[in-house]
Amino acid sequence: MISRLERYFNRIWYQTPDPPLFLVLLSLVYRLVTKIRKLAYQRNLLHTSGVAVPVLVVGNLSVGGTGKTPLIIWLVAFLRKHGYHPGVISRGYGGQLSKTSTPALLPRNANPVLYGDEAVLIASRTTCPVVIGKSRLSAARHLLLVSNCDIILSDDGLQHLALQRDIEILVIDGMRQFGNQHCLPAGPLREPLSRINTIDLLVCNGNHFPGAFRMDLVGQTLTNLLDQQQQPVSFLRDKPLHVVTGIGNPQRFFQSLKLQGLDFDTRTFPDHHNYTAANLQFDDDSPILMTEKDAVKCYHLANRKIWMLPVEAQFDSTFSDALKHLLEEKHGRLKTT
Image 1 (tube, rainbow, N blue to C red):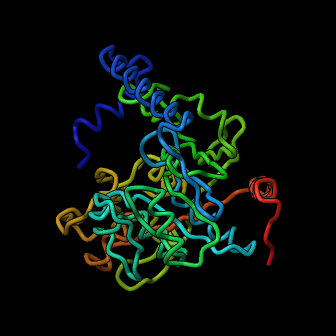
Image 2: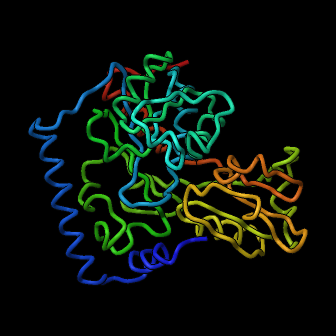
Image 3: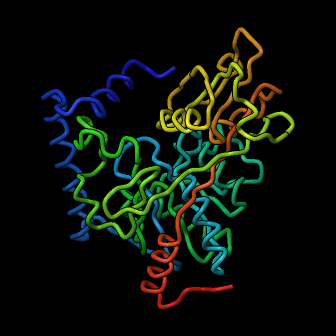
């Protein structure tokens, strides 16, 4: 279950405009360290290196889930439509191999315990090459060695300045946005809010934000974990239902289910939680629903009661047009099929 410490920080970050003074002081230290680090890159005391293909970074300013994974999946499809062969690099958060310094290409049917839930989900949904690594630069170089990709998507790579990037896309959680707007640990921000001014494209998940393109995550078809049977979401209406999550912002998922007429109780775990059979045990035979990110770690626990709800990122044409323009501007061409 979510720890008392995590509940404490969520309350401070998203419900308290004035955090405790000791956290504010620690936040000032954090901001100083990040500023010194950024200056070190700007003055070549720390080195930024590029690779032989364009790099698109998808990231966020705040800790926790904002919707980067569905956006990465959408971008892979968009780039393929325009003649590219994309690959993805990721840290592989939650996976055991994320702690090693050697980059690793995900094999077919990769184990999320080793490679991380988000990386496995991206690989399974897109079938494009995905490399995880502690260093985004090393991961990018390894990806080019083991694949024929001609453009790289860096998942959660905004703060990894050692890798040069051509386009930066920032994803904003439309529900929580930037909380109390303080940097860690007084608030949820990894960088000061002024970082927005240097981003190429802003994307807001599920809401409107000044200067941002709205992204909606749409999920309408349930999939059974055991036999892959599919049903509309309405299949679970008017039934007792358990919703189990281990994601960054479960409230957004809960809200989307309520808007589709579902009534349920919840059981929440920390982001990237690795499930055990006990986590999915209830004292009844009611169906259990989870996100696709949770489901990739639960196939070995599958039974007919467990369902997942995959989601798709949707935009209007203005986002596609803006991305096309950026690719043309940065590289003087846009591939077409």
